[in-house]
Length: 327
Image (cartoon, rainbow, N blue to C red; front, side, top):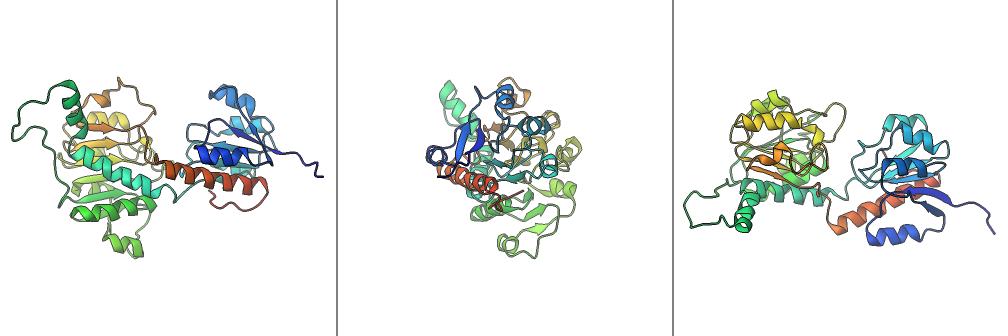
């Protein structure tokens, strides 16, 4: 009979039901729970754990790694993004990092297209009119938004999610599609399939697109990438969407741009900086701004798939094997 101890794994928040049941059924794992979801409780609970099962809300930094100590082998995050993890510090300590790319691509792309339609056709304002009793007699221009047909599109970051957004937009008979990113990918089969063309200049992309979609990863280089000078270069009627990370857009500059009359076509955000955003935030005072509470991957099938991939990464890291998806 084996006397090996179970792997101690810190889990702050539950996974979706099926994945949580799977985790609780793994005999090799002892789940370590903090007393609550606060940072202080998480730090108190993480001492001498072998693994951390992380969500975006949980910052994995040097302080936590110090508290966990040398037993920590793997940090597995239930997300494709890992900006909440100090990657350099983990690598310096030989701690593996797992993430969940691909499985949330379709759900996020679906959400992006829905958000674009909701923004362009003024769904939030229309819903308020129904609920607040300001829906009056029909007039030709009341609550008019804009159609998507023939509009030029600029995508910031044509990775997995950007490609899937572009594929979906083809059904709307859009105009020219261009993208900006770290490299020219015009020779890539999927890029050719969506008819996208590389734009080497981000200011040029912003100045010539009717619809701008942010879908790039958050890195030190992309933090506050989209600032006031860039937004001032846009067409006044442009639509701006962000389904990536809130801090890619300098949010105070976005407020300033809206005050200057930019983005009259609307602004659609599934991400903000910070999250959650205060209901009193100035950004929410503009009629043509549609903000969602970071629900890009919020389909149950997707969240279960993300959680199961994170569990695979976790077990592989605990057992000293290569991760299915690693950073």
